[in-house]
Image (cartoon, rainbow, N blue to C red):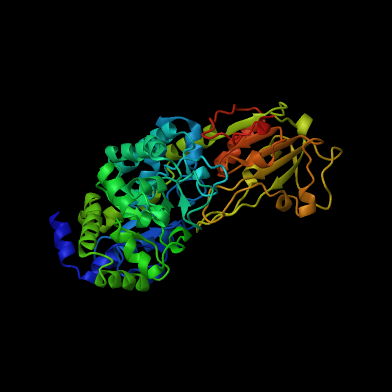
Length: 544
């Protein structure tokens, strides 16, 4: 506390305001560092890039430039949103499908060790949202599923293992996402639970993690109208105020009722759930004044810092809240020991970093998880296992996929194709000018699926795109040619193909997932995944 108080009291008001900001770094470059660190923020949030040497050099440079220890954060959620030079683990839904808490703890420890080696101190994980609205495009595979008990068990395991490695965890998205099929990146979304149900589910999840010692919680652009109306019966529009600017949700519910004394970070303040609610000049100071301690992301840091200062001068941000937020953020850094660490302790020499990443024992555990997660949802006509004598000629219809996240790899199904071809199958791509027929095709293999990603709005199986035109989209092959639908992302695509007899959820298109999938398609290994959600979307039709 002596370091915290001395550091805080030596800072100007402008420096204290800058300390509350965590800015987004997308390129891991020294040039980008110079631009961002000119604003003297409290932290940088890093998105995956492709080259270890460059990432290491940029991290060393950023840490050396900062006068006050710089926090480095990331959305280290697994799946395809990872550095290619780290151990690739399944996303949260894939981990939940393994249904093995011991394995979950091992994976979290791997994430912690490798993230610390790369200089990270803070991961914006775990996602503790309840994946109930199956059309929600942003929760999906980022969640542990739809069962609050499973979510809590997985999240507790993750937080303990991650924080034991010296990386702070962050439970998100307060006060709970996954009930509204809209995306808070685009609009202010709503948690419509009554408070009895909320306290039995999200309240229990967040409250238990608070008791367990989770270091940070992310306050999202999500409304909880039942709680606001419990306190303000005539709330009107205020009932739909995003948590990120709600004193009642952050201070009264989270801090006073659940007893959280750690750090509250806003969700990204550039998101539509906030920008559509308040003008920027009002929203910037409101985020801190109403209970968040850290202001996440900015399209124009200088302008946002001016807005924060203006809010302070006009008493829309109190001196007490600024004081408390700066104190808490510096205390968070001190809790992690950043003020005592040398540069080599923050990020080791490159050779040591390289030795920590992708160790054989890490890769073995990740490979096991990728294989264990694959879930056979539907095999109504006993199509599986496939064999070259019955299904030799395979036509692949593939979705190229996409990702919001910087550094995410392009979709590549080479491991799956190579595995099938090595077993005697012949593969050809779908040609809209020469539609497959029973005379020239023994199996249609759809490789589809989008991992949960911001700003999509909604998810669906786009047959017009897959079949190369809207007219072709109306043509279905499944009654004439055996058809297999595999999702490498969201688990609910059967909703758009209810009459397909065979469906598999693989959750992510990682190479290890593809290799393990081939072994299961051909009967060399059994399917072991346990679905964390109702992949039939509550519709009986989908089961037939």
